[in-house]
Length: 536
Image: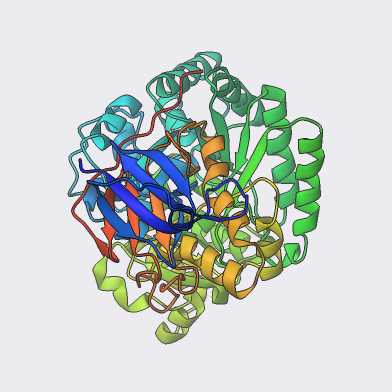
């Protein structure tokens, strides 16, 4: 591998300190030298290496996506420009309590069906693994960007208990502890939960606390999608904080939002809750995406009791008229727990993707618009769509508040996560635009964060949470996972009308000193590998 000298870059090193002008030398996949103000000082510059003129560009550590849904995309799509083009050099996958390891044949089939809307069914993938370690080994064959993995608590529960809404027996709890420990021993960085998704949602606080004790023992962290982002949001956050403190386990609150009308302007209450815990010694971080709409599956809005038994039971309940009417009443009148305790407003639910291409004419319409087109009630449209699409429909939820988004991103423990679902004809633009949107919209245009602050949020803070001592900073000896961008033009090209438009102003991205993006174009380099937990 030929060495590289990046000349005359404005280095924003990820620490939050002021930028400085420097030449940065890379050799053997690591940063070997940083020479500040080399040209002005007349310093001897390295020769015999490839040179890149970075005049007018910022050089920063590669961005770390703390909440990604690329579990199958990394295997399916070697290009993976959705993330590489943004300057992302590491993604954390295994999110929301559901992913593809550890599994057996039964649970693999169940999980593939349950999260088709997130990742596709994976017909084109050879699922030749069953353990966390074997999945990470599969990633090590070569992927576009690096990836770290969280043991998914819902998948673990499916394997040990099934999809029933009941407490685990002592023997089942022991089995779950064992599965979590094995996943961490094999390289996972922590444990995720999806506490509004079956079957993870059926776990009580005591069960989750016991699993978090295992995570703490191995030096990992707990990453919950907690029980409510709506009517019970503050209580749900408080439950996670108390649980993690009882287990003495580091806590990372993923996609930390305060959504729906009941939470407009209430972000300061959340931040006060977190600050009290931090000041008392808790280890808490969080991530957000810089948009107001959320994204999930249409099936996720259903009441939790509908999901007991797994995907086939959900479909059977939707088909039964009396049960379907009960579901409608909870969704539209009392407020389903799947819709965070808030009665659904169908005009805020936009269909963003379908698994069945014959339903493609509905994509881009709200459920209410689609129902008016068909001359039927919104629930009838939603119910038909769920059944015909075999639960594979993804939706955008237009339920967020800009003032909450800005307040939370200023928090002292904030990091960034795209929560990017790459499936569907019109996915959420956060999958393609999160990191340049932070830099362009919230730094350059609005000044919510300074450039140095924002880069720290995207790099060193997440690296510290992941306990990666040689990533997240531009430092001698650190891995050469780097991004060069133009601070005057960087921005998200993706929007809700054209969600796959590439970003602007990011000409170069390197992983281990190799160009994965060069002159704004994706190369054929597959420099990414599994990033395993640092032994405790």
